[in-house]
Length: 83
Image (cartoon, rainbow, N blue to C red):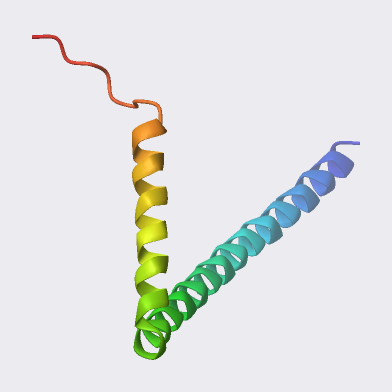
């Protein structure tokens, strides 16, 4: 009976090792995907600025307004300091 439990423990360790490898591969793939999306967005922004500057300016203004709105309406994460 003890051998059976030892075998089951070894199988559990092997499955856990495969899980660790899978997690490392998933993290690498997510990093690559993030870098590709970042590169595509930067290059599309540059191309838009070269081909249609007024549209690029309007897009930048809309993004700036959205970021400012989020900064103003977001809850405060830092505790208030008392004097």
